Structures are given as structure tokens and as C-alpha cells.
Image 1 (cartoon, one colour):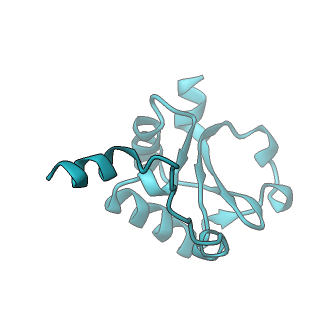
Image 2: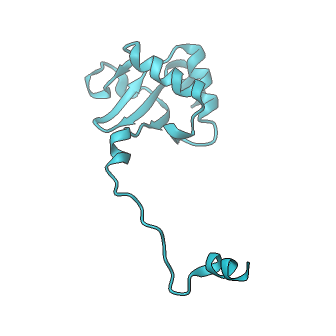
Length: 114
């Protein structure tokens, strides 16, 4: 299984428009195998800056193709999945309101004591 991923593995990137697949070079596949050694799915936010740049560079180098449109990739093993969230999706959430308890909580008690 590791040998198959090392030989011809792809990296799945979950986007708002659906999954896309990166076709990394051999050395990049080794690095991705190390990245995904403990978890099969990683959010992009937990990746280091260098790892994020690698994913962005692979996407911009036209190595970012849809599995449905590629020939022969149905059998390609997936090394791991990166969840790529768009900034617009997080901006659409309403702002959080502070939690107010009836008794005022520990913070109110601390202010009264000082």
C-alpha cells in the first residue's frame, strides 16, 4: 500500500467546487506520505507555511486536475486529503455574541473582590 502511494499516489484537495487531485513528483510524494503519516485528512489551516506554499505551487503549476476528467486516475491511490476552506465561507458566519450568565460568572466575582 505504501509502495503504491509512493509510486503513483495523488493528493486529494477538497474545495468548494468539489474534490481536485494533485499529481506530485516522486520526492513530493515522499514528503506528502510523511505529512499524512498520522492523519488521512488535514485542514489547510494546520499545515505549515512551507506546506501551504507547496500545495499552492502544485495547484498553480497545472498539476491540479479533476479525477472525473483524467484518464486512468480512477485506480491511483490517494496519499491524503487536504481540506481547503475558502475565506469567503468563514466570513459568511455571523459574529459571535459573548456568553452572559445570570450570576455574572467568575469574572464578576473577581471584580467584586478586588
